[in-house]
Length: 103
Image 1 (tube, rainbow, N blue to C red):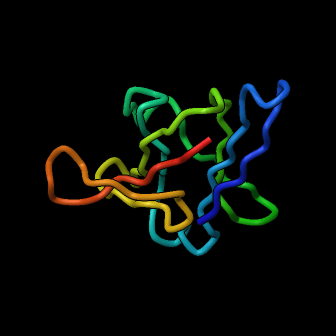
Image 2 (image 1 turned 30 degrees about the horizontal axis):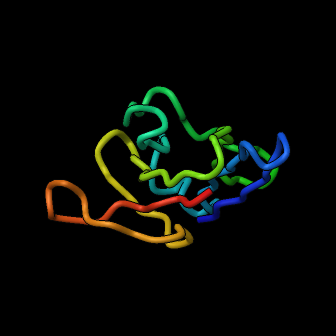
């Protein structure tokens, strides 16, 4: 898994690329990144497969200077955290953690 941050607009926003490694393709049919920035809607930010590398990725532009809670959802039912997240914090349900992106 990987998170790439590219600050733009004089540091006021950031293009964030979320990437899942190619070996994940053997384990799932679809994946999305969900979080506060898209109202946890799995239909809004789906990862697309790069046919050359086999990796799934998606890029979103977010406002800099904020923290964003997020997770991946695979096949509409399996939740994953990104080990490269800036930090983790407990979910409101108390049974797991969310990934946190700091921009």
